[in-house]
Length: 610
Image 1 (cartoon, rainbow, N blue to C red):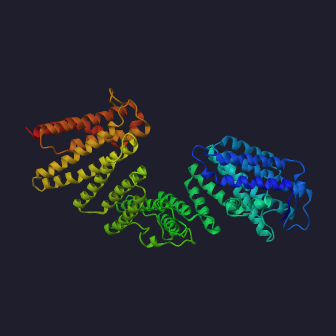
Image 2 (image 1 turned 90 degrees about the horizontal axis):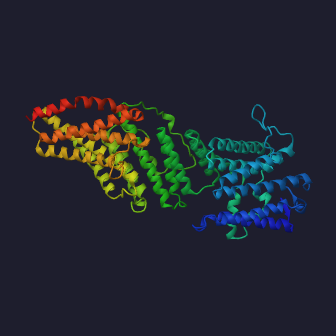
Image 3 (image 1 turned 30 degrees about the horizontal axis):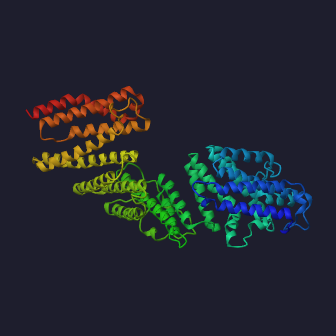
């Protein structure tokens, strides 16, 4: 297009240029005024709307559209003016969304949807039974291509507004309309090679032409308003909306489409793309599709090592995803080895999701097939351990406490799944001891006052780890007794010390739920999410207490009385709260059996030490 500027049009272009620059620089606003730039941009957008609304603006701007054989007629100029006005109003509504005024932004967008239905031909049919575009004439096609970007942008922001308001089904519907509008425009473009879709530069040409380096940011923002870039955003928003609507498979599909479009259009930042690609791998891990998860992480690692990718945080995040991958693969390998499930993978699973990205050096360092022996499991474990070390270098305890704690817990889980392949009981015991040591050290570094939930989780896991270690020690003692050997006092003392430690951890876990003094008791009704963990801790404490091989009669009887009290507390709570009985159903029958057997156990101890 060739534009002959008039003074009103120059004023309009200046306002739009300044508004674009302010929106782009809003990330640099001070913390006490986070929306300063956006509020200023809002004023400029309102001024621009006033100019477009002024009578005579359309006749003051003489244009010549590329592909038209003559100067535009009044209908053409009116249509362009309407599109300008609509774009400005959409931008104004999006400004309200960006300043956490979602309800007002949504109201403005729905008003535009109703008022400008005719402008954007929102209800035209568009395709025949085969899905091909139905176009009355070239004029209708050109009109559609002029308005396509504005239409897609309107639907995109309506989808975003609905997500802000937690109306995810409505968001998906709007965004799918944006997707359909783009696909219709693409079919029109394919039908006429000389045709092209309008973008922001056709509405405000001077506003997006950088005159110097300071205006490059505005130009980049304007480029994001092209039809192709807007469609990439549509796919990205659909991925988010499907995720919020609890449709993970659809969310993953659109996430993959978004990532591939960004590669195809070279419209991405390497570090950000890598993190998003790594995040996609976590969906595939959830459905145990290790081949696709592996490919995502290989592509992410390759992109993160791109010269343009300098963010250490993103690389550490990708290392965390590799750790999750390795742990999930070890767990899957364990389940297969124990015949808890069938291997549902196929040879065709390793699909190249991102053909334009090199697999990278990680492709050969860890497999995407399950381990079948200790050596293979150990290789996966060592791979996870290297990435744990890398991630911990960034996620330090003093700066990223929660992230660091999760990494330590992941390290413990990696040991847990590895030792399932270890046949030697002494080495299994040493692995459990290593797990207990790292969890105990982490717990000592955390303040229960500020990290109560995290401390509870770690303490419960530490208790379970000590129980696993105790099982190995007690098994060794029982084997010696069965062989007619007398266990050494040191071995018995070690088992008792481990058991008492486990009981202490579970008791401290339960104590963290007690009411403050002077009551110091558990509440009459626990929170739903707390019920099973608390009752399970009481169950574990009772079970361990009853099994300890204490050398004296008094200690054994005290332990049995303690076990009986805990079993009874769980049983009575389940009788009083029916919901608790359902969540504790796997253990409740055993608890009742143990209560019934408790007098026999007491008598057995009395007879043994008589």
